[in-house]
Image 1 (cartoon, rainbow, N blue to C red):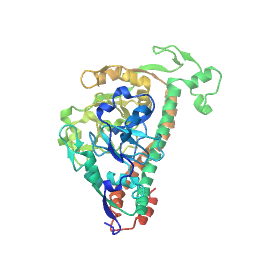
Image 2: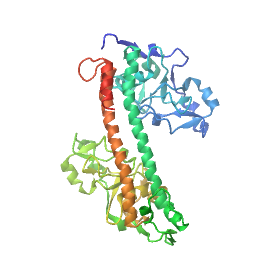
Image 3: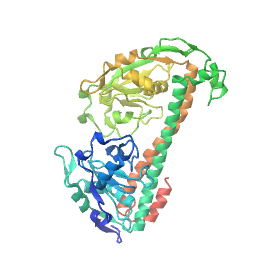
Image 4: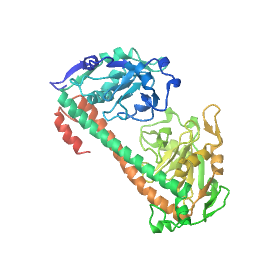
Length: 463
């Protein structure tokens, strides 16, 4: 501990305004009947992810209902904690928040800080550190739904190390700079992915280039060489009007292989090792490209026993049970040469002489592709796709000529290379931030006791 740091309780740093530390409302005070399409947003667990705050995906209450729940109202700068359910979640409402006020849910509590004593962002980062998490979860009860016993009393009594407020600002600024850059990269990736989806929809769903040429117009947003690849007429097919020269085909006709993941008994916690062949789980399949971190691993020998469940770069992965409908692609730049599917997944290996794997990913992530993929869903018990492998093979789609697919790949791969670069930078920045966090919060950086101003130089060198 640095000499001019002190230990204070959360009670001592709370704001003097009423309900500075408060629980969310009782469950009976917020029901689905209270929800409206727009109004005061309710903060839930989904808004307290791995970063500071996710300022979307809300349900809303009327202003009048929010007024009734005034003690549970939260404002920019307030820190939000989950006290029941997914424990350890901490978020901070940003000063540039989308809404002027929020309501915390019945599973959460909030802290409004005394701004003369503390920087709320510093307090937030303390509770994101290992020592802060341990203090927050010290009174956890695991009987039934995990919960913090006497949550308000527990929170108020927590001791945290507190430097002078000028150093708090610097520490929060350093860590915040990492999070700002991480968020910027994520927003850039969302934009790039939106561009890729828009191109797919324009070319292969709305047929905009064909319609433009049929009307004697130059297709928008493409050069003459690309425009020349598209026909100027439509023809009848089993799926309705399609561009002339295109064809209706099935997954069976373009597949090199379609196969299931292993049985549940083949991959268990007991088979996991610290390094080896990564096992793909549902959390890796949320985006177009495989999220390439936080894996469990099995040995090379175990992976060989599950040969049919081995997948590689270029394969398209689907979920067939649980959170069905997830579709992702293992890109050429992925971290590992091969992976193992989990028991709720299956995959498509394309014959790349006939079809582009990227085209298939975007097709199955489109509304039409999702509709066809999930048309054979069973809702009995866990949602699942019935006979997923044989069913996938029967799905029909419109296949463009190879020259158009090659041009699509060229454009989309360029976007994906930028996305992959940004994602790798996000991972690196997250690791650096997590390396700095405990050292800055405790007054130490890397080795020995170093003044916080020196940490700024370290951070600047990596941002």
